[in-house]
Length: 314
Image 1: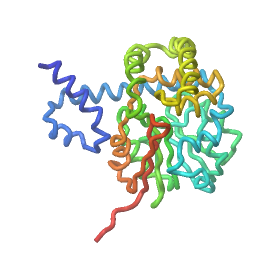
Image 2: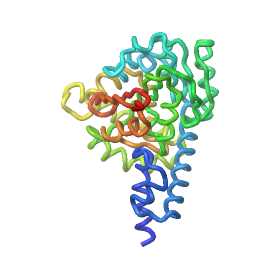
Image 3: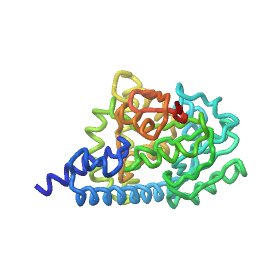
Image 4: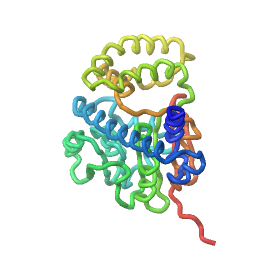
């Protein structure tokens, strides 16, 4: 009985912040005992800290951002058609989860007037070094996304980060508060739709790799690179294969080291969630964003955008 309650609590709690419920409201809705809920919350917080450590070590080992992997063209691929890169020009932008500064460089190239880069891990030092050439145009904050202050930004971006946060709702709420009225928030997350075959392979593999050190996963990524490359070449010839759009239009445009890094990014973090369209949109709507639109990028991931607008007082 106890084990069943633990399993039930663990499964349901994964959705608590995506649903925008308070802890007490969640307990009441699902009739869950508080001790099991508290244990699960502790586990999620532990997963958050481990994921931050994993990325910190990963980005400390892999610091370079070059070629298409770090280009404005890739930024366009990630955010369009919901947001054109021309709309970034002259804007104050906050990026949540900046890692080594790859997206920061894209935003500079797109003409942002000022970029606030937020990174909680030990890779913060790498971020500072990689962005110092941009001078006063970039400010770096060594903190989590849910700790972002109110900065009156025009735009918040979080590319490939929110799906690695076990409790994302406080981050989305912080994004809402740091925006000026009419400001927009755009996130890109892994999608569940279009990934059925991939997840049949990736999820069992991640059961092991999320427990391994980064150096071991680095070696494994190098081994997995060759079958991944073979499948990508096959997808060039047979465009109806799963993930063919991403593999041919994005993955194969990276150099070999960056392709291996993409594979490492899939197997290394302690926490990764693949969102349905409804879940991805609810991340923004539960935080108070309106006018939400989403785009199924290359048929395997979701780009979602929403606007901060104060409720009308009658």
